[in-house]
Image (cartoon, rainbow, N blue to C red; front, side, top):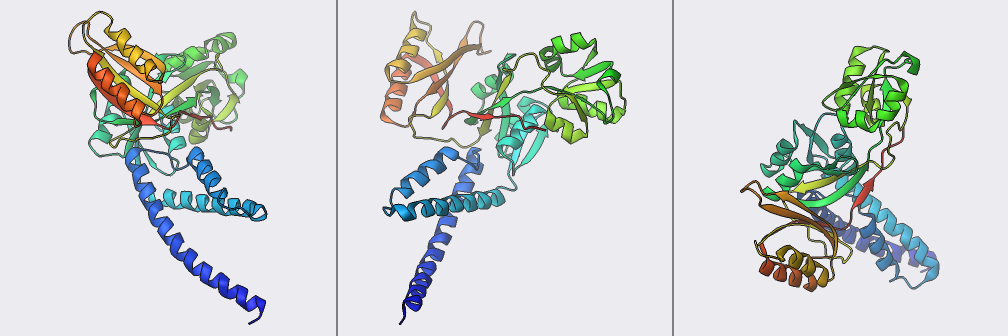
Length: 367
């Protein structure tokens, strides 16, 4: 047998083995997709993929072949993501608002292959997941300009869902109008009061009359339906595309540091094990002097960085409060279990609201 025939026989045998291994791998991918649906996790996990490629590439000792193997792994990852997208095509994600609202934008940015389902308010979207109407909900918990979204934080304290991810959406406001409008034509600007406030200096300098709407996307819809050139809306670039509006001027909000943090709520708990993971926890403390200080000390003494600590009334009795905590580190390990055991001695109640690998920035799309 000549070398070419021998090589082809070897390749045929290897390809047969690889076909079987490929099918086994894709069955595992199906399990990954189902877990991500249950936990409300993104398909693309760049940190996990980089770790897999790094660990597997180290197994190839032939440096001439290593770069080709990395290409092979990258191709495998892309195929896996594509298959997961198909499997998650029917995933339903709840959000509060209407098409083009920032909640809608965040939901589609996090889950681009899912069906985003609108609900009239935060509580309705949360309840839709508890009741099984949707797989997960994407809801705002904090804005760098306006502060906490207390309705959502309170519901997270009271409800049964887990926070399996936090995503930061950079909020960029733009002046939008029907096509053919010149900025000199505009006399009135419509938007949500918070958006108008964020752009107050710009709008005042231009001498525009301002009118409040329930939502930035609702404002854009009203402008589009009116067909008028003397009225404009303040909203996102994605909203402009959705309603066929022209962008008269970009980035008119006063502060360039305007970000909303969106949490993904799911019925199934995620349990990341990495030391760089983050967690959200609620606790109440006993009515004893120094009890809050002890709780905070327990967290720090066990090696966990406390990112934030906030208090909210429990609404069960006057002057009773619960504490919202965000921390860094894995609760699954020995240190995490020790910390929780010590907290139980100091706190009257503890609730682990969720855990995730890291907070992710979702940048506004360009036009």
